[in-house]
Structures are given as C-alpha cells and as structure tokens.
Figure 1: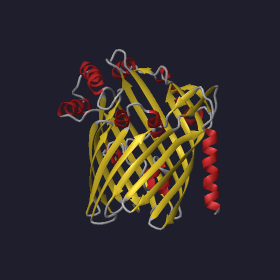
Figure 2 (figure 1 turned 60 degrees about the horizontal axis):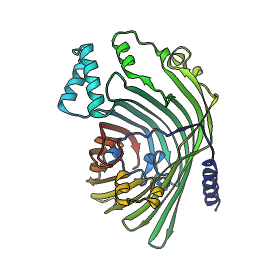
Figure 3 (figure 1 turned 90 degrees about the horizontal axis):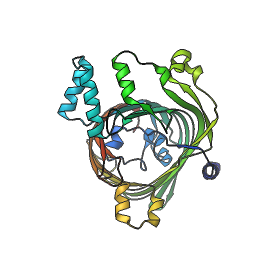
Figure 4 (figure 1 turned 90 degrees about the vertical axis):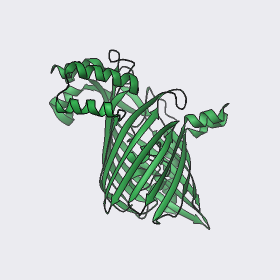
Length: 389
C-alpha cells in the first residue's frame, strides 16, 4: 500500500508541476538508439529495462537487469555508397577543404540536415520495480537549405533517474504502472539563434576556430515521467507522459569557458527562465510466444494522442504522428526489425551474446508538415554490456 500511495503522490506532483508558465520551452534530447529507430521510432511506450529510462517508466515492472554501460551513436547522413566514399576520404585526409565544404552543402540540401549524436549510460532495474540510472545524451544538428545560411544547434543533457513501478494482476488482465523522478543538467546553444555552421566549419578547416564564439545556455532542473501498460494475453495498450517539471533557470557561458575552467564554468543558475515541454505517447502492441525460440512482436505508437480527439482529418493526423514497427527475435539471440516512421521506412538488426548486445539501424525521420513530406536519413549503432533482458 505504501508503494501505491507513493506512485499516486508522484503522479499528482507531476500534474501540478505541468501548470508552470515559462519563458523558454525545451524538449529533452532522446537517444536515436538502434533498437527503437529500427522500428520506426516505436518501442517507447512498451520499453523494457534500461530503455524505460527514456520510454515508459511502467517498463521498470519487469525482469530485473543490470546495465553496466549502454552506448549509442548516430549520424544524420544517408548511408549511400557515394556518401560513405566521401566520409572515407575525409577520414583518410585525401579530401581538400573545398571538397569538404562542397559535400557539406550537398548533404545539408539533400539530406535535410547534417549532424551526429551519442548517448551513454548505466542503470539497475530491480525485480521489485525500483530502478536507478544515469545517462547523458548529446545531439548536434546543422540545418538549412545551403551551407551559407545553415545553423548548428547543440543540445546535451545529463540525467539521474530514480524510478518506481508496480505490476497488478486481475485475472487474465494485468497492469503495469510506473513513475520516475529526474534531476538533470542541460547545456544547449541558444534555440532562437543557433550558431553559423558555415563559419564554424570554415574556421575549423583553416585552423582558426575559436570556441569563445559558441555561446551556450546551461542550468539544472527536475522532471517527472509517468506511464501505464495494460495487457490481455499477447495484446498490450500503453500510455506515457514525459517531461513534467518545474521551471528552472539557465545562465549564459561559452564553450571556451568550459575549456579554460572545466566544470566550474557551468552555471548553476541564471536569469533566463525555462522548462521542459511535456510530451504524450499512446500505443498498441502485440507480442507472441514471449521468451520462445521465435518471438515476433508488432508495435504502433502515436505522439500527442490527446490532440486527435479534436482532429478534423483523423487519418491524416494519425499518419503524421505514427511510429510503427515490428521485430522478430530468433533463437533468443538474433533480432531483425523494420518500421515506418511517419511515412518513412527503417530497418535494423541486433545480436545478443550472453551479456553483450550489439544493434544497428538505418532510419529516416520526418521534418515536414505531413507524413512522407521531408525526411532526414541517418544510421545508428548501439552496444551494451547488460545482465538480464
């Protein structure tokens, strides 16, 4: 009963915190991990184990697991033979500065953006639903129609997470309900201006780059997430609400300040008020022959499902927010995946050898006004040392 009461109190605190009025609205950077991106960005609502630190806290009410390290890295670049050849030329040093500038402009225009990101973390998910994790996610993205006017946006967020989940069984129906609380520190470029990507790249190639030109905002805050999963046999319904938090203050500094003063340069307070923007996701999942030699599963999730209630074109709006994916786990150690991310296809695969997991995915995500309008392609690779599923 004490655990149920704690969950109820945390849920109420999260709802009350969401009423705060803010100046700047931020979204938490989400890892483009290969498992999720290979399924079209799905598997947030029905996350399990370590993935629940970024997905649905209800997923903590499952099998216990210890993740010593989970690393993901991704690049916003279509993995064509031409692009891979260009990247190889840059790495080997055979590409000239003019080649690199020309290719960067081409990538920005054709791929609707250029950049990369990474995440690293560790966590414990206990058998009794109590979970503790730490992670860091960074995402750097240049965007624009040409190199000349392109902007670079940088976002980095470190999180410490304490989660609590509880399973409930009512005959053939089961529930999982969970919440978590997070303390985070966030560093990002100014969202309204960004940095001039052309200047940064040109200066870097000419060895004249100065980190003092990169102005950043930094500050710490608190947030809460909550979710529920309902199951009947192989069918699951789920809902998660993330990033409910109080206002926090951010201060100005430069990248050069961090180089010169290390962590002491990071501001703990400032004059600019900000908060995270809450997000909501609902989903339907079907998982057959769980823990069998062949385990197929299918997931469909929609962002901001509450807005669909007042929709005048429900089919179009669902497609504009739909993440659908499927995976087939074979022989308990090989997995293949496919998905549809707001009208764009994705593919992925993974291998699980004892406590070592390796996954990779090719994905495209939507940037435009409707499904299939304006995609940005990329690749993602993930590796983990994990005990338990």
